[in-house]
Length: 112
Image 1 (tube, rainbow, N blue to C red):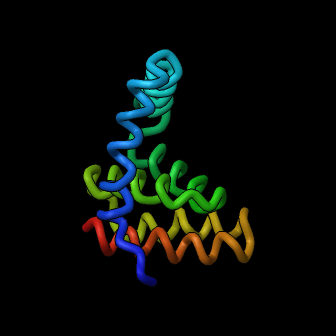
Image 2 (image 1 turned 90 degrees about the horizontal axis):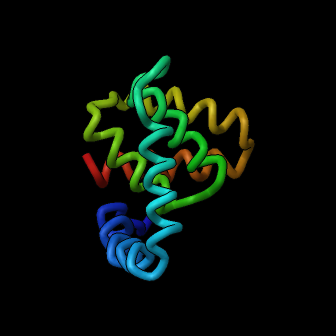
Image 3 (image 1 turned 135 degrees about the horizontal axis):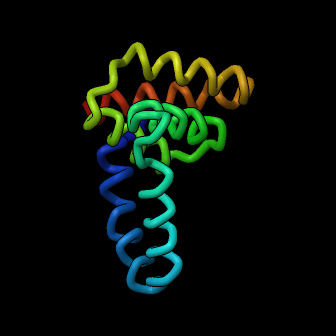
């Protein structure tokens, strides 16, 4: 795999910032939704981010994989917990999710 998730996330950040400038209302609403969705209630932040990485894998979103793995690393998630979440993504997403689960492991190696 020739991808580098530090580069992928780093390359996307200026364009995300540009979206905030070009679409302030949309991006503020998206940020607010993200803040509300990740707020700790019945589920803690690690659990919510593990759900997010499973969805990122199942939806084949490399940028999402990079940013959610980055957050998981910051939250101190173990590789074992990540692997269990990837197992659920594979179960729900089939063969294509196997490939994107491999991408998430690659991102974890790049970003740890």
